[in-house]
Amino acid sequence: MKKFTALLIMAMVLFAACDRVNEEEIQGMNENSKVIIDFLACDYILLQNEKDSAKIFDIWKELYEKSKKEGFTPVVIAPSSIFNEVLNNDLWGKKEDILSKAEDLFPTITADMRVRAEKRIDEFFSEFCTADVLEEVNEFVLGGSLSWIERDNHTLPTANTFGVDELLIVKIPTENAWEVAAWVSASGYYAPNPSEQVALFKSWYERFGAVPALVSYDVWLLYVPNPPQADEDVIETLKEAYAFCFDAVEVTGSFPLLALPLKYSNIWGFWWD
Image (cartoon, rainbow, N blue to C red):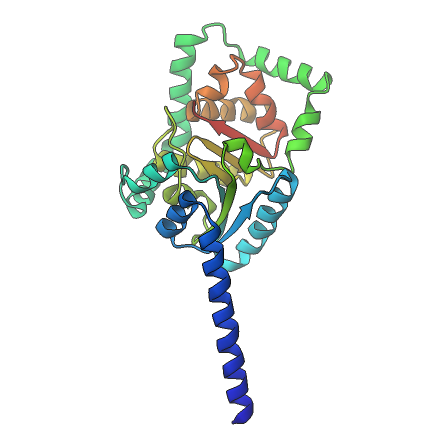
């Protein structure tokens, strides 16, 4: 009985100590991070003043490997006031509604995205030619353009990249990684609605193992262990990615610069200016 009482007291002391640590961490957060944690009510890791982009990736990757057994999906969030406004305005409905709509979209999402892309290509890129895109990608490879891709395959951006001073790694309570966009989604100008994001992420997960790794108000980064390799798959994915994020091409004016990382990178990045 004395042993049991001692163990109980020890457990209470440890629990109280954990509470104090958690309270101290929350007090040290900026207000934007507090809003996100309050809204999501998920377990999290706070990264303050972390300047090593490879370490951020390593922390996320370790959590991702653990998540396969523990039923959650980790995602890095770059907190901001705009991001919090989107979280709280309930524009697209509750996550249950987003997931339900995503299931309805899923059977045709990739075909719909390709049609959307082809219409925009006809309007703005009349000289688009798949053979030319693939040839230029090969020229990039021969010219040594994979060095920066190989470097970025094992990094995630630091907080400074987004003009903030801390990042959150939040454990979203779903084992289906593509569903993360129903909890948190990029909402920059021209960004697809969250249901489309979920449906497309599910398709990319099933085909390439893609999982959301980082999100901000106007950025998605996905970790993609098995990117497309066959020419036909690369071009189909290129059209889907272009429809998903027009800025990925229209900022640079180059389809090959989007196709290159889609084929050779394990980190796919999309942004909406």
